[in-house]
Image 1: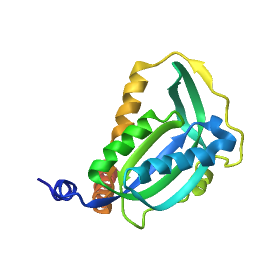
Image 2 (image 1 turned 180 degrees about the vertical axis):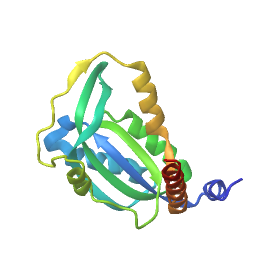
Image 3 (image 1 turned 45 degrees about the horizontal axis):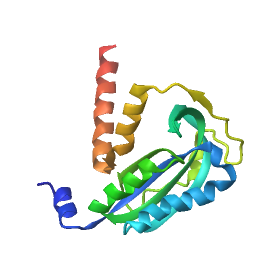
Length: 184
């Protein structure tokens, strides 16, 4: 059993970060929707340690969501994040509530470190989003089964961030680039 599995089996609280894209049709109700998301964390025993209010961003690709048996596509979303500590077993309950939340377009939960945070409005500016802009109106579409399966797999994935792994990947990339330069 790995060290992480042992810690979770013993019920140790871990630090997580939830990144969430909320549907852009919320407009004036965005604060209430974000409070609901935070409520899922606290009602399952999580303790919020930091947060960034959602900011309107343009999405890298169109995302679909089934709302009341009708599919909608969105090109923008409200992106926000919450950093929290929680028991490993509480995470499954939090994710279940997020899966059922109609205002959540996509989300991702990652294990994180205390110093890893970027304000959502800074993210919006970096990718060209407009915090105060008008969201694009959704359009009804036919469901795309493959897109839905991929989205569910991504939403359910918990990714562990590790600076040492990132550094190792960077080193390997540098080595490959140098080798290619020598070949040319």
